[in-house]
Amino acid sequence: MTAAQESLVVTNLRVEFDGFVAVDGVSFDAHPGEVRFLIGPNGAGKTTCIDAITGLSKGTGSATLGAQELLGKPAHKTVRLGVGRTFQTASVFEELTVMQNLDIAAGLHRSSLSLLRARRGRDSAIETALAETGLSHELATPAGILSHGQKQWLEIAMLLVQDAKVLLLDEPVAGMSLDERTATGELLGRIAANRVVLVVEHDMDFMRRFATRVTVLHQGKVLSEGSVAEVQADPRVQAVYLGT
Ligand code: ADP
Image (cartoon, rainbow, N blue to C red):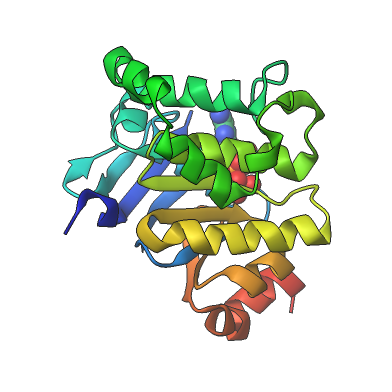
């Protein structure tokens, strides 16, 4: 098994804030080759799960990437271990160009020597990320004037350049047009081929179209898990979403 084929395995994750249990014994796994969705109503604990995996919140239990335990490591260490994350609001450097943003992402990942080597020639990691995300024609565009969708794709491209093995995407299509949602779903399918892609999402239509496996959280616990058809047919999920 190569490094790029490592799975994310979360076991009995628990996160507590001042006595309030936001995530209560959650287990799920996500493998390269699938577009994994984590859904659930507001307050279900989805963002808290990915905060714990990335080291932004303290959790107990276990979250492993391959043989590496992620829980208990600070955010800068989980990044180094290959955990990449996007937020609901794209955090790109708006005043810098697309290329400059990608250069910064590459610099975070590489030693200065290898960056220098890469600059002398064509940087294949950056070119691949640009091609994957459809941003090849926007190299000189300041990130601030990209469309909402393009900013999210730039953030994903930055994670690809950092060679992230796991991409945790928090509501990646919020505020996107239908065309942008479709392009994003197709992009996720492509990049999931050799990475773990875990999408936290509210948008049920997007989930139906692009998820290959779904975990439904409710009140900090796993309510249901399976294919889109399986979770949609689960009466417990219908009760939570439709109040039936
Ligand atoms: P979701 O992403 O599913 O909407 P969250 O993970 O953001 O849910 O939140 C789960 C629960 O934990 C909510 O009740 C929320 O209010 C609570 N929560 C999240 N972060 C904190 C925090 N830093 N301090 C206290 N409570 C929090």
